[in-house]
Every structure is written in structure tokens, then in C-alpha cells.
Image (cartoon, rainbow, N blue to C red; front, side, top):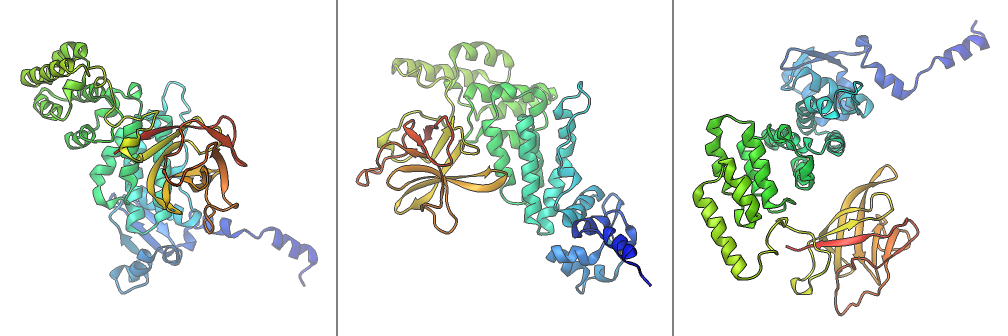
Length: 412
């Protein structure tokens, strides 16, 4: 007869649901199907758990396809990718997505993260194929973490995403291109751009939202050409035609640009001619060393409402960043951005009611007292003249922290 002591011992050995699911990763006796990668690596799994999380697996393993009756299912991904997919489906995470710090002080973080890029892109492709949108979000989050540590990695990530094409979830490549646009030029090295194909470099050089001067874009092209064979000089010359050389400082144009050998004499002559005309019009200084799509510290009423507003210097978590014009609220222009607050993803609004607010709106009652208000403009909003948000005059609300934000504007 079972004693109370024995019963207590049995209860003490009971495992949680989380531990139970994790045991499927290590106890092959619990698995009834093997996923075989293109590299012949085999990953054991339980078909019913896979089917419970993915409709694609459900149709594959419980439907009328051949895989439903086969103990081994061959899939178009490497074994490492399939292992990460199974791990995610059982634990909502994967070792590939964890932060790996360099243990050797002589090895920089780029050397640790760079080799992971192809595997992460493959995992994003798998997330799209198996219809696992939250896994795709985790891959994007990992990419963004890598770019925070080493901004120059954004070039290699962009290249890998573009090569993958439409097989990765929509939006990941766009998010990484936004990182490329804002990567400080001084942090870009030859090693960062060397991985770019000519097509992707062209996409960067022709991007109208690039926050780089024309001279900086030329220097990126020059760095790229230095890592290529001599026959690539013809390609580099073709790519140089996407740079507005007339907007480069004449001294740099006459020295660094000319000596590079990447720019034809006809291009240089045309650039100097345009500069001479600009000087004649007495507007030379306004055209040099300026980003293609500059941020302005003052509003230009004649140009209407800005398409983007950059919030800087705010003390509150997550508030800073670029807000995009995305519609209206109560008939007035509204801007928003995705972000994270207290560890949770959210959407920040920059919008106008009686005053302009920076808030996390209540999902059910936006613009109400249940919003998380961080800052409020100190001046009234005049309905008869829909002015954009003020650049500096802000007050702290319930969730705000000193200092108050400053705003910059960008027009179409």
C-alpha cells in the first residue's frame, strides 16, 4: 500500500509543462518523426507537437502528403535551421537567437556575430515557410541587437536579406535598410561594405532617404572598390554615376575623388561646371556636405506638414526615434513609431488633441485619460491653423522623465 511519504516523493518529481516540452529536445524516445536537412543532418521531433504550432506542418504530417506516413521528412533547409525551428516551437526561443558575447578580449563582437548572419536569414526564411510570424519577429530583434553592438553589420545583413529575396518575411529587409541609412559613417569600414554585391551597393547609392552626404557615399563606393579586383573598376565607375559630385566639397573633389580613379574626367568636369554655376548664384554653401534628405530644426510652413519627425533627448524609455506620418486622429495629423516600453513591444504616438502629446495610446480608447502620456506641448493647438508639433517647448506628463524632448523635421 502506497504511503503518504511515497506519494509526496512522486509529487516532488512532477515536472512543469515548460520542462515537459523541453524534454522533447533531448529525449528521442518521445519523438516519432525525423526532419532531414539539405546537409543530411537529421533532427528528431514529435509530429503532433509540430502540427499543434504550425498549420504547414499539420498539412504535411497529418494530411494526405507522402510525409504523413514517412518516419523521415526531407525539407529544404539545413539541419541547423530545422533544429532552431523545432527548438522555437517547443520553447518560444532558440539558442541561435541568444546573445553570444565574445569570451576572448582579443576577438571583437563582429567576429562573433558575422558568421551567424546566413543562419539567421535561413531561420527567417523558415519562419515564413512554416508560417511562424513571431519567430520572424525574434530574428529581426536579433538582427537589431547585432546592429546596436556593431552598426556596420547592417550592410552584411542587408546583403543576405536581399539575396534571399521574397522568401524572407516582408519588412525585415526594409528595417535593415533603415539601419544602413542611419549607420554613422565613421563606423563603416572596408570589411563592412566588402560583402556587398554591385546590385545592392547600387540600391544604397540610389536610396533617396540615405542620411549620408554625397562625399560619404563616394567614400563607401571607394571602400568597396578597394576590396575588389581591378576589372571591377568599370563597375565602380558605372556606380559612381549615381552620386551627385557637384554637391561634394571642391577640395575633396579635386584631391580624393580625382585620385581614386573611379570617376571619369567627363564626370569631374561636369561637377566643377555645376559648382561654378552654384557659386555664381551665391548658394554654394547651402549645397555642400548636406545629407540627401536632411533633418531640419525649424519648420517651413510653406512646405506643409513634415512627413517624419525625429524625437531626440527625451529622458523617458523608448520615446526617442523617428515618428512617421500615418494618418489622423480626431481629424488632425498623427505620427507614430514602433518601440519597446518596460520590455514590451508597443506603438508610440505623436499626436494633437488640445495640445500635442507623446504617448502610448490605450488600444481601446486612444486619446483618453488611460493613455500613457510622457510629454505634452506647452502651447495650445490652434484648430484653425494645424501647426506641426513644436520643436522644443514641452512639459513632463505622468510617465515622462527629464529632460524633455527636442524635435526635428523632414519634408517630402
